[in-house]
Structure formats: C-alpha cells, structure tokens
Length: 267
Ligand code: DGL
Image 1 (cartoon, rainbow, N blue to C red):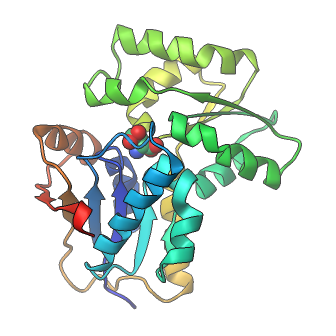
Image 2: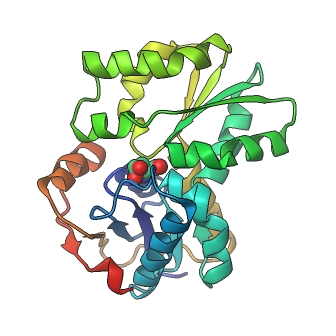
C-alpha cells in the first residue's frame, strides 16, 4: 500500500477532464493537480518550451511527495514524456500511449482520425504508436486549434462551434474513419457537438479513461494502491488564478475546488 497522492498536470484547466476519470477509476486515490494557467496554451509552443515547462512542473509535484505523475495534457505527453521519464525517478504516464492503444481496439474498418492541438499533431506520436501496433491501420490527423478557446469561452455546443467542428472534421469523415481520438484535454467537453457532426457510426475515443485504467493497473501490480483508510484530500494548484478555473472546474468535476497559486518559474 502507498497512500501518497498522484500528481496530475496540464497546461491549464482542460486536464480536469482527466482528473475526473482518475477520480472515477481510482476512487481511493488523492490527487495533487497543477494547471499551468499562466503559461497556456502549450499547443502552439515548441517541443523545447513545452518540455522545459513540464520539467518545472514535475519538480514542483515531487515536492508534494507524489507516488506517480500523470501528464493530462496531450501536447506535453506527445512532446515531453520520453524526456521526463529519462530525467526523473518517478513513474510518469502520458495520455497518448493509452489513447493510441484504445483507438487500435476501437477501429473495425482500420481508419482512425486523430484531432488535437498543432503541437500534438506535429509530433505524429498518435499515428506512430497506432501504426506500430497495427500497420494496416490508416491514420488521418487534423489540428483543431479553435476548439480550445471555444471551450474556454463556454461555447461547447453553439452554432459557431458546430460550424467549426463541421469544417475541421469534414475531411476526416471523407476518409471514412470509424473512430476518432479526442486528442486534447478540452475535447471531451465537446463530445456532444462532435458526436452530432460525426454521427453514431464513428466511435469517439477519450484517452483519459484508458489512462486512468493504465495507472490503476500499474498501482495494483506494484502494490501502490491507497488503502482508503484516511479521508480523501484532493489539492489543486495553478500558476495564475482567474474565475475561469472555477467555471471549468464546475463543468468537468461538478464541484469547485479552490486552487492555490504558486510561482512555477522558481522550480
Ligand atoms: N492541454 C492541451 C492539450 O491537451 C490543450 C490546451 C493547450 O494548448 O494548452 O493538448
């Protein structure tokens, strides 16, 4: 047994959708969440910058005595997981590996769509992992940078969002995909809108759920599960606080957790 918390980090508030799945699948675990709200978006930044930011965050989370770390951010997972694993002596999980493996399981016609930020799509990481698992699968990727600001505006199912989704997803649909990976923390909040556009024959894959299951299996295999005897205590940190955090926290977790602000540049 290991009752230390699990660290989860993201470029901002989108990672709360991953925290939600972790809370669901790992009911006894405590979470220390960090959202880099002062420096987002990560999706438009270089690999070097995203990796530098991610290293600072891991250093910060290690001061909170975490037993494992989940990179909730797809962009940071795709760009920095390998480097973080090389640098730090703590189990670190990204969302891209579990998301890719779920997509391989989901597709029947072997045509998979990937949507994410520019920074995620640029790495080709989802495509690489899916093709390594099954080289007969065709992968079609599309960066959808406007989705993040639309979600942050609270426009999860407005006419503008529907039109944007239609524009972005049209070319993937033309390719005949039967599965679509929601490769960005914010996209699960657009599930209804995206689902309406792609129709019920396209399966939406949310990497967060599979990530939570992967971490659960790891904790069980290594006898690191929380025994649940102490009261649960989730703690949230951000690098900049605005009411936007409360709004998205309420949306993703159905509860408002007040975050503490920390100076991430000092780590
Ligand atoms: N969290 C990022 C991701 O999942 C989206 C927001 C951003 O660009 O920072 O890729």
